[in-house]
Structures are given as C-alpha cells and as structure tokens.
Length: 66
Image (cartoon, rainbow, N blue to C red; front, side, top):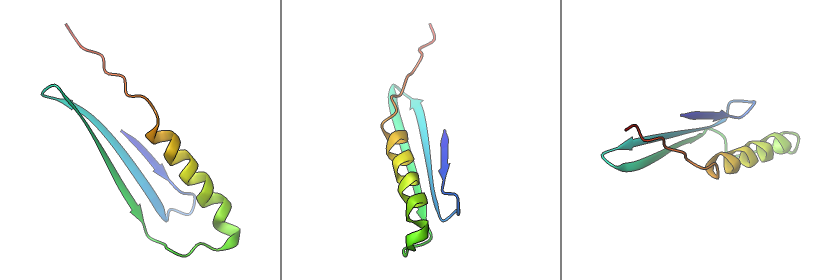
C-alpha cells in the first residue's frame, strides 16, 4: 500500500494492491477537498500530481511462494 498526500493536506491518494484468487486487484482512493488553487500553491499541487502519475506508473511485482 502507498499513501501520497499534498503538503497542505488538501489532496490525498491511496493505492492498494492485493493478489487474491489468482487476480491482481488495484484500488485507488482519491480525495480532494479543494477546487480552487491559488497561484502561490500551484507549484505544490503540480508536484503532487507529478508524484501521483509516477506512483500509478510504478510496476507491480508479485512473488509466488512454492
């Protein structure tokens, strides 16, 4: 599981990966409590979304036990 939160805590994303019954289940929970971003906060929001895209593009590795 991985949690990503903006510095001002107005945006949060949680990624959960589970392997059950031969299936990979990926759940993404996204919460954004603000819709208006001031110019001085734009750089921080931009960086958050960059990290979010990087997190979503991370490969998933599953190790099978014998």
